[in-house]
Image (cartoon, rainbow, N blue to C red):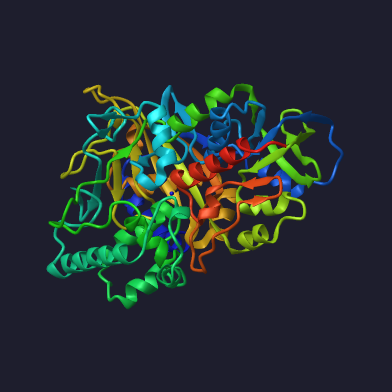
Length: 527
């Protein structure tokens, strides 16, 4: 999952003013506790500041996995399934999972990043196998049935639009016939393109064609302009969709990526056309950490957290990997037969010695979107505005953020009590400014921004808010900006590259498939 500064900076003043008006006259509110949690930017910067030094200790393993995000965990699972147990995994943070980790607020689980997984299509059969292994789906009378306890409960999503809540995220209530006509026209174009090109997830299952290259060479905004699709409500929704999946809006994301958002899954359905219901998704209070925790658990002490990978050196008979153990300050050297490089590409290009040309080229091309995730601990439910009832996903029209999900939505307890809301802010429209703000601004700056944003729809938020925890991701995800499509090689000697970056954007299906294929390839090799 689904999570821009140029747009945000323009909207921030509006949101700040709206929040100030909403909170005016309330006197001095009590101080709200909180802080930064979940990530340690200084650990990543240890690579930037590192100087060459001899290792303090040497360890050996058959396979070394550098990176404990979804791809690294998928590689570990593939090795285990093929009886390769001699491996070690190095992870920067205190828990594996990458952008799919979780936190606790007064005992309530909440996501620190990705919070849902759409039901995978047949192209993602590796992910389907994982879901079957975890008991999330089973075949009954020849049909695949998903465990309803893990499917998002209804109502799934709603939009705060024109002063009240409406069902669904496509602006509908009060829009005119011209808007509806453009919804239908965009849906028709998506269907036409789905018939002309294959949009697959994972992307490595789709061929690169002249049509997809043409779409990839231009921004989504430019393509929409040429199509005459200029309705502000449609454009807001498409911009939201791009920021949700890619971290930046239509002005930066490629047309291929903007269309892929719909064409690789469920298409686009205008009101009254086909199945306009929300796409079924799997979700949990802790988000996709439910999946990564189950991938990590069987690895046991083969996962080594708090490690910054400093150097990966392919040698004649193996691979040497140096890593800084932040708990001890010691540099470990790991000697392995092979290495899965499950690191972001810009990190791989730095740490792999004499990096292959394709790694350096990919690193130069990729743009990364920073993200901020705020978890808000509420002592009581919020009072609601008129319209659609509280949903799992709650979005505000025109907001710089992506709205919030409610961690208690999956609870079967009919009595509503304390809960955690998770709010997402993509900063990829001006990545450099966003990254700098994440490092420089105090956590209270972000607390006030989320309060200003959500107080537009929930003026009583400050009255019931106990704590705000802020998670920062300076390079959260690759953003698919315009450029030629390339099918990158994933193998260089004893190095197997596996990360969602190689797909050009970050979703679970891409990362898991690439990690699985790397682990399976190694398991089939000897020496």
